[in-house]
Structures are given as C-alpha cells and as structure tokens.
Length: 122
Image (tube, rainbow, N blue to C red):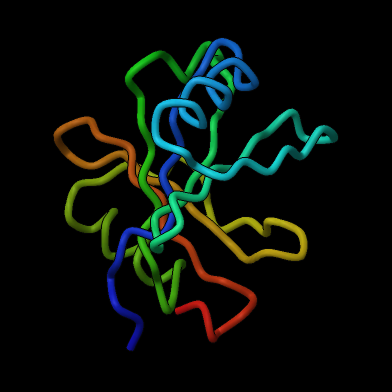
C-alpha cells in the first residue's frame, strides 16, 4: 500500500517566473521550467517539491493545492464523494509522469490525489 504522503504542492502565482525567482533566492530551491506548459517546478532537495500554478478564475492567491499519494485514484475519489466531497477533476493523465484527480472536501478545501508512472517513487 502506498504511503499517504504529500508528494507535490502547487503554489498559485500571478507570475510563476517571478515566484520561482523569489523562492529560489529565499530558500535555495532548484527550479525546472516547462515553457510549453508555462509551469515551473521547484525542488527543496529533501523530498519536498511542487510547482507554481497560474492564477485563473478558479485558482486564486492562497489556493495552495497539495497532492497525496494514491494506489487507486478512482477508488479514493469514489470514497471521498461518499463522505461528502465533490469531484472537481476525475482521474487524468499527466503525460510521461503519472495520473491525478481533484476533489473538494466537505469544508471547501481542494485536495489532489496522485499516482506516479514510476512505482519506485511511491
């Protein structure tokens, strides 16, 4: 069974490049830019990592999204829904990386589930 660790954290930013530069200078995080997706990933070096998501109508400053390891995203989404959650994103592939799904818990928080294509990462 997969540990239910937090495996990725997305920090919303009006300017992902500016946010990346700020956190690189503040914490020394390593950055990897994916220009084709306008997405920058950060790596703190000890297992913590994430990315900077652009602001949208549905993603506002402070809407930090955490991704939790899942052995079975569809089953976890179904269980979350049975416990009162709303499914926001059914299971979807992240090309060459893994799969994710997102739900809103009964208190209004958005949480993502993640399964890696590389089982050694779990």
